[in-house]
Image (tube, rainbow, N blue to C red; front, side, top):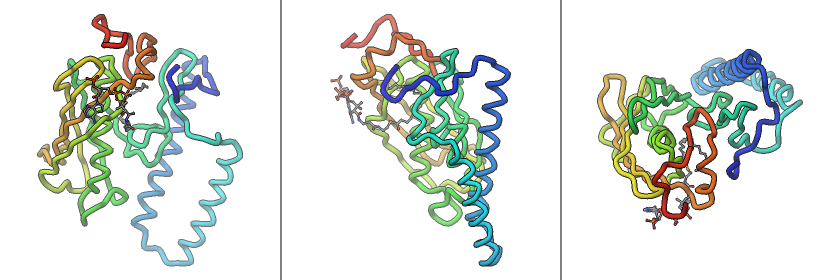
Length: 235
Ligand SMILES: CCCCCCCC/C=C\CCCCCCCC(=O)SCCNC(=O)CCNC(=O)[C@H](O)C(C)(C)COP(=O)(O)OP(=O)(O)OC[C@H]1O[C@@H](n2cnc3c(N)ncnc32)[C@H](O)[C@@H]1OP(=O)(O)O
């Protein structure tokens, strides 16, 4: 286990039960995401907003009846599958996540399927906040080192905002630009609904020294972290 990686407190042996359990988490996050969007956009009158706030607090109290104190970390299921459910970009339990679905699209390549950034992600009027774009691209680019077996932390992420990104449907893509020991350089882009590149990115992802000893441990579907044959300098 790496730091921040914990066995699930609720191991699920039965795949059917696991699917149902995850679907219920996803549905809750979807519902809260809708609430979040409407909280930004609502024009109902003040007493109605106050009444809704009271109801929402009551719902929070129900969820707090059983909640863990800290963050989720990287849980694994009993079959070793990673569950980064809290991640603010892809996490299935996180209503802040748009959410992104990042898939491997080829050798050393990944893409985020088209997804929608609405009113809650607005920066310049009608357009996506630049910091949100950075988060999206960090996630899309950061997936690439993981799929090539070197899951790393972001050492730097350089962005070039070519044109404003309208709110609405966007997508992303990334690929390996170079590798050097435990370091992977990745380039990528954010695209608007017309498929036009709005932002270009280059990032360096480094397997931290503390994590290198764990890379021989397969950890499941977020990338097979088997140590590559030509292991890095400190292997
Ligand atoms: C990896 C853990 C495994 C867990 C499983 C993960 C599953 C992942 C699955 C799916 C991925 C999804 C995607 C996620 C996306 C989001 C990612 C984030 O948000 S990460 C949070 C933000 N980033 C930080 O907080 C980093 C803070 N910085 C650090 O912790 C260190 O500085 C770190 C790890 C980057 C390097 O530290 P050192 O102590 O391990 O190693 P040193 O020796 O300092 O650097 C190693 C090499 O990298 C170069 N380097 C480091 N930083 C550099 C920089 N900024 N520019 C250029 N080179 C740099 C150095 O010069 C050195 O190069 P030379 O080996 O000598 O050739």
